Amino acid sequence: MAAPAKFVLVALAEHVSGEGRECWPSVSRLARMTGCAERTVQRALRTLEAAGLIRVEQRAGRPALYSLNLPPTPVRESGVGGWGLGPPSESRTPPVRESGNPRQNDTRTGKNRKGTETRAEGRDVG
Image (cartoon, rainbow, N blue to C red; front, side):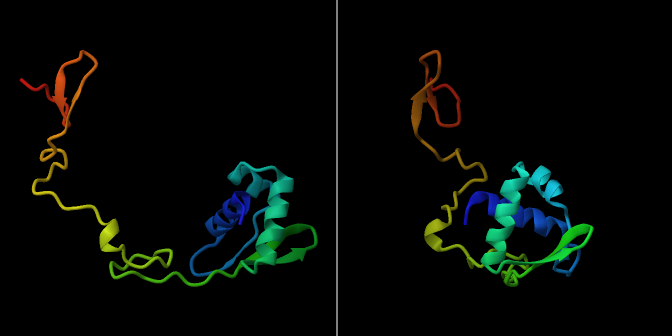
């Protein structure tokens, strides 16, 4: 899915209130929110509708009614919703350091602008 369609989908989701799945922002409002041209928003809406992510109901003299057909977001163990990615794998979890300062145990050295050798935390080495 192209980026404009994703932007439009997020903008539509921003307009949905509470537990509902319907909203009715105008194309011009969606264009302002996404930074896209109105024609780009119209193409994105057709793309989203063709993908089954939204349903569009045209209304005479009023903005269209958009119904979002998104799957429910699973709730993680922390109680916070996610994108269905599940808990992070151990390989993606950064190692836990002994101290609270992540650079305190770092022994890498380098040179600052003056050419003085420094440790990773930025202090000059004697």
